[in-house]
Length: 295
Image (tube, rainbow, N blue to C red; front, side, top):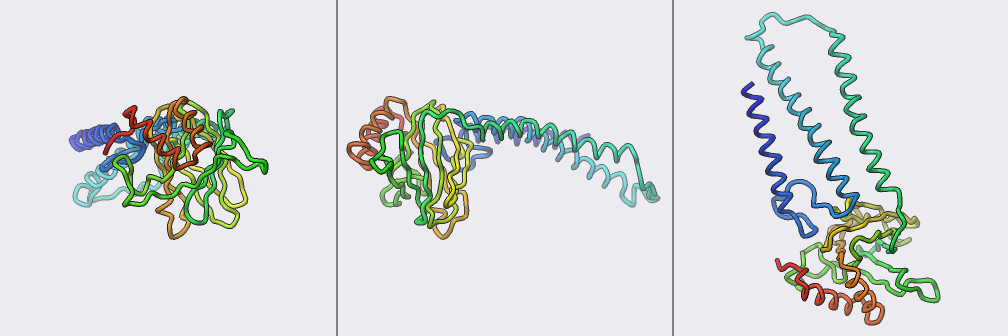
């Protein structure tokens, strides 16, 4: 009983510590000593958090403590000193039924919300805008905004390639290995549909944003589709999550979620002045509003 109380107390303290560390996490990326998942800002990410924190984690904790208790009980009660004459029991119908039925029930309990989550992820809603994402063999991403206009050949007028920002060019608001020279910009509370592929001459990549609860493979010759709807303004980071070669660790993703007015201003700027000018314009706009926190 004393052992059980100690382990229960430890589990509670660990859960509280994890919650505190998680609450401190932010900025669209992991922080030192953070535990748990990054704060979610999309319906899918919020469902994933609920599924993990309020279903999977309690089930795992109970099973772990139960097995630990059984191990301690067996070691104490059935060691050679306490039990010099071992039992010769080989079968117990009740126990065998229990250890078959209980895992099945647990799996069914997990499966129901799991299927709901999968349906939410893969059932594509009507999009407010579309972005095409292309993984390049030179370990960077190209983005196209077809909704902002197309050329005569059908290509998007707004298209740019985002590269890892050099360490000697990082600003106070940047994050090494996560910031890019030109970020992706989307409006808040809008459904964004992604068409994701990879250069036909390239390799498989994966476009991933943990705070959005999404990961989709970019495969040469294939067009995959995903979606997100960010409900909170901010800067969110991700990286290629497919082992894709020597510069796999240097293929970041930076997404700015802004108000509709700021997005409209940015889109007009990028159409007339180009990606670099639009980036400078957006950062100046957000700094003036105090939305770019200094580190």
